[in-house]
Image 1 (spheres, rainbow, N blue to C red):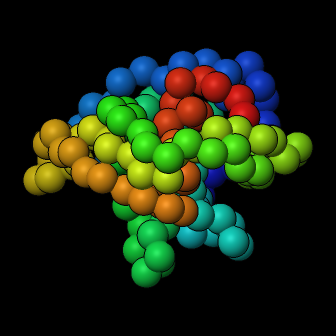
Image 2 (cartoon, rainbow, N blue to C red):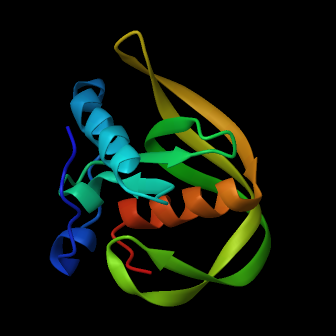
Amino acid sequence: MIKDLVHDDAILSTPCEPATAEDAPVAQDLVDTLASIDDAVCLAANQIGVTKAIIAFQDDKDEVHVMYNPKILMGLGGAKVEESCLTHEEVSKVTRFAKIKVSFDDLVDGQLKARRRDYVGWTAQMIQHMVDHCKGKLV
């Protein structure tokens, strides 16, 4: 279901609770909402009003991926970049890593399975932005 974006800093600055397999409808709402917004490439659950650690992002092939409980384990090649956000009006300067290692849960057959993957470039930057959202960090 397509949800309205939340612009309330009180909600956006609240650290997200761990997600479970029962939060699959929230993940679907993220995917639906992301698809409904022109030029949007990533969303975190708190941006649609649900303080669960779930993110969705679109890769270079326009495929949408969902991560439950993402955590950045390592980052290499930090640099200052400018970012905009769907739920925050100002452009912000932040440090982002060119390469990251992420642990997250993936929903497989109704159960969460632990995963670890490396990401680089634009995808790494999006994931870092969304993990910040899950931590309640406003860019």
